[in-house]
Length: 145
Image 1 (cartoon, rainbow, N blue to C red):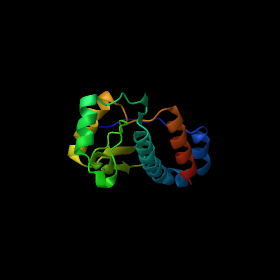
Image 2 (cartoon, rainbow, N blue to C red; image 1 turned 180 degrees about the vertical axis):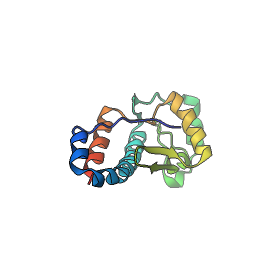
Image 3 (cartoon, one colour; image 1 turned 135 degrees about the vertical axis):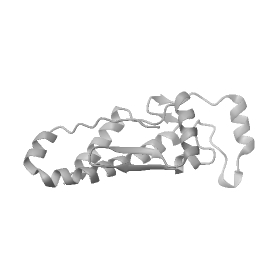
Image 4 (cartoon, rainbow, N blue to C red; image 1 turned 90 degrees about the horizontal axis):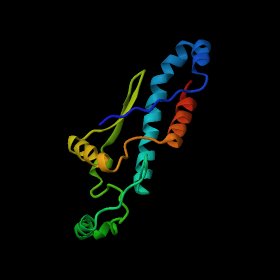
């Protein structure tokens, strides 16, 4: 699963002219750190039962009852809020990679990737709203040399 976030720092053209090579070399690091900052945003939203388009629709009564019956109560009771976290396998496999022109947040586990694609259809969570994009843009700008 893949999605794009367009980050257009305000004065990037001026910065490139002014700093040239040093800035170009720092872009990969800035993109990597920006992608890494995106993972906690996604996880925080999931913990709140939200995706980038808003709150998730509730679990069906049948699924909620199944989830409560399947839960390992030693870890605490499962959340009745739809947070897409039953075993945490999917969320724990979120990772990033970056090159000098783009960064990606993806699932390193193929099984988790399938789960995420399925869940993302009914409860879109792999993406960022405008507020989150602004936070990520600030991370990117702070990490440019």
